[in-house]
Length: 286
Image (tube, rainbow, N blue to C red):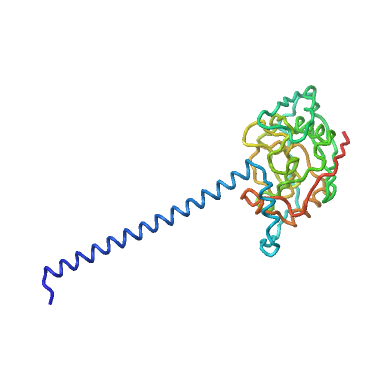
């Protein structure tokens, strides 16, 4: 039978083993946690890199993937009811002046002249048809909502800026829209100038709305725009400058139902549309 001294020494050795075991487990947990954190940081860094750089590498990677490895395209649910067009609480003066500024942060993706910024009308509408490989998309531009955006869009269209450009970003859930207007198809291209923001707090986005894209910086819009065919819970920061016809919405619905290549996107579920939308020309009936 062990003595009290022997029992105390045995208990002490057992306690020491438990302390060592706990320390080893804690060390392993710390290593695993560090690896997980590194993995998350790498994913976030990759998403940020996609946003601020060319997306050509992502396109190449997508083209190497076999069809069997691509995830199935989820079913897209699209609302059928149009969103009401926003109305300014106070009409703009007519005419207005538009301050189109040279964009010192990047060169123009295509060489174009800046629009005329003096005595820009804020009355009336303009009918435009975007001719694309997916079908014609008729639009109605509203000078009363965003005269500077309308003036710029007409100028770019008449200079052939949008010809042969692809819509580079499609969202099918949460943010249901198709973003276009970048000749580089990277999300980084622009006309070499920026325009003033023309948004107001009463704006809500939804099916049928045409709006200008921009960065988080104020007055940073250029040539990129987005066409909303469904839901779009966005802050009222993006200038609405027109609407999409029923015929145009049918084209967008078809493109949306074919899905997006989210693997080539920036990690938010959006990406290049699986059905290519390439503009072959724009007609303007000013």
